[in-house]
Image (cartoon, rainbow, N blue to C red; front, side, top):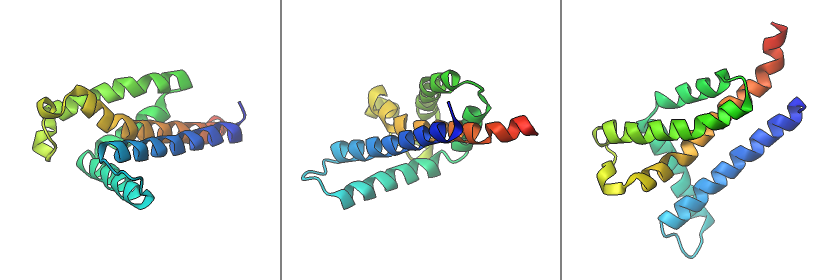
Length: 138
């Protein structure tokens, strides 16, 4: 696949993940009737909160995705990284100010990290695809 097409698909997938984050914020935050400003605020504050709490993790996930040579491997890294984040939440989440896993449940915690993990891995994958030609020339 040509590089511009591949990068455009990565960009569309990033937008789809942000739309999913907005939908989850709307449904879980009970923001009915739908208000785009409230949804955007809930989405941004939720993503920013997780980015702040787990700041050292996100660059590692971006680097991991950028290091994997095949797109299939990068896709397979998503459920693995999601599982690792659920385990990290179990072990370290309450110490970082997050609700315990026993209170939230595994599905809720997996839903909490679904979009941020996907965003980090997709960004790393886009970096890999964007720099792929430059790495071959070097």
